[in-house]
Image (cartoon, rainbow, N blue to C red):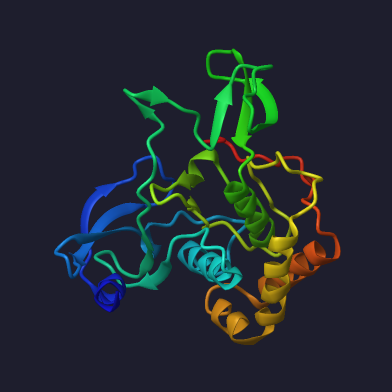
Length: 268
């Protein structure tokens, strides 16, 4: 593992492709081969490829991705793949371990993704309906997500992160059985900005197991964790994180939408 960690932190990044649908430059890279001779696949987002955002003027989006990972890691939830800030072929940027995800659309079958669409009135068992809308062809559809504890944990993390962009495509079901969240560049603002497709649990209690983890996180936040976060986000944003954490502990219920735009667009 030490050799893999060293490659992840300092190994040469070789660009093998680009995610063309991303709004900021997002590159897929291979790092030096590991002890088994296999390259380590990562996502690399150079700071110089970020598109400036008027409402996120402080720091970099890459730094916010790292801060979000540090929070997920401190909670012990493992929702966000390991993420660091390091140099690359286009300068400093965020580097994140690649998630090998399940392909639900194969010749053998066609299962619903964790977040998907279905005809109205036909929400399958084990899924929550978020809203009804019109698709590109003008047909009415239901936006749904799985009623899955792994995804629910991600939804709670998004509340703490104040995630302004939880699209359906940002929730990945890994082949290892874990559910991962990616793309956390516009998180951790000091003002309420929660925009997510995971509203199916709004108003419902948060499980005791998650509350125990959040309480431990709240106790740890003022120490070394806050110092680590301060390298990437402002003091006001750290204070707001502490406030959101306290609010969840005082009222352990998933929040209801508070803004006029509670769902990111596009939703996928």
